[in-house]
Image 1 (tube, rainbow, N blue to C red):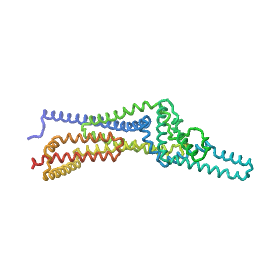
Image 2 (cartoon, rainbow, N blue to C red; image 1 turned 135 degrees about the horizontal axis):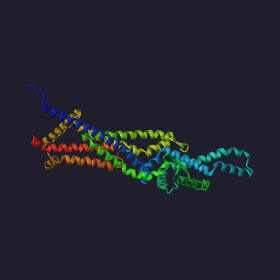
Image 3 (cartoon, rainbow, N blue to C red; image 1 turned 120 degrees about the horizontal axis):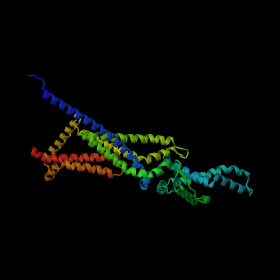
Image 4 (tube, one colour; image 1 turned 120 degrees about the vertical axis):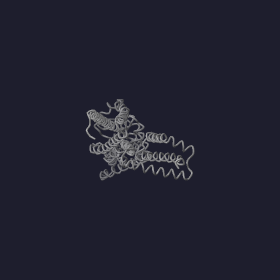
Length: 423
């Protein structure tokens, strides 16, 4: 019997080889297009996270106030505010001049010249008294409400600045974002007068500028405010659409989803790294207007904490999705893990059935519709995370574990319901 192929058989073999080559080429092209869409989608989603955060901070007063409220209890920020207010009171009163005038007035009535030596201690004593009263205000519970009121009024003014309406309490001065602490100064003035320091009544109503931040981007925000508002809606939708297109384009959608999840996780890790680098650059570029570098660092950490928390949350979600895709794959380790899970499920079901717990009609219903029930559980978990304003890493892990446990219970109940028939 000869192994040689006749002409017709060889032609058929060549045709089949050509088909296989064509399919491989098409599959390669699809994977290339899918990978490109997934990478671009992940990058767009990263930009969307930054844009949504920026939009909420710049144009949503309630979110801004909630974000900066912890600064009112930050020790470094309070110290910086107390220093700025004390300086403003001292500049308004000109304590040294007042003490000198008082000594001159006493000397004209016959007081000895030695009083001149007391001018410095007297001025220092007055300064210490002022600082004490300032600290009483800044380190009181009342300051938290004052800070919140000032922040709300300032952010409303910022929206006015960005829309061109202008503002009195918050203003852009070149590259500086300046907050007016005049309400705090007025409260200090009242405290000084109530304590018997009547000279404080002469302090005029003046603005007390406190530089919150400094950036070259501030002058450009006004022209970009409307674009930012639109991008906060467009970019998340575009990112999700690109990711979905990448998964659908992939020849193997499970692997496509796995690659997409890893791309999202990588993009979010880049964002977290960018925030860390940005923190260092921000602190290195602080100008002389910022009096406390540690206070400025605490401001940066507080203001960006929701963005960093969101990036960490998305990273964990992406890793959970990637892990689920891997567990459903054909790999040896994945198959062994699935077999182990099935064995544990069957053992638990046999134990329940042996104890007479087959759950009757409810168990049969769960067995017939277990896939739909598990899908509902997954969707409910996703909805929970979305509606949870700031779930954080711990929140996402908790929801994932809860969904996994409930899905396992559904599997065990469904298996226990059919165990008597198998026996």
